[in-house]
Image (tube, rainbow, N blue to C red; front, side, top):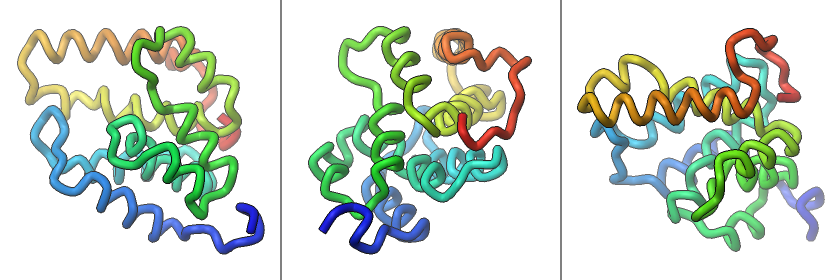
Length: 162
């Protein structure tokens, strides 16, 4: 069966897979990692993202963090677009930020997911619990990626095609 012939994972199922994959993992602030995934998925939803983008938001760090393999993603009952978005936002070892940004920009739907991810990563409340040097490093890293992606604050928000 092809991806379009078999039933796709529902959003609840994509969420359950992501939560299970990241079970026991915490973020840099010591919070359950699933809360970051939830925040990114909600950020995609509130920015006008569709179900494929929301599913990708739930799964956006699963391959990058080695919680799920690319082989799992290839075989998963997800739309090709969802898979493409997950792959686009998955950083590759040794990859330059410019190349990463180009891939995101070239993949329909990926920019919105990355925008929501960056927004949550750069949330001042999340960053405030980190030590000063880490907070500074991450703030600069996120600002640079936002600039590479053209998310400088003046761009129109809410486009589901981003």
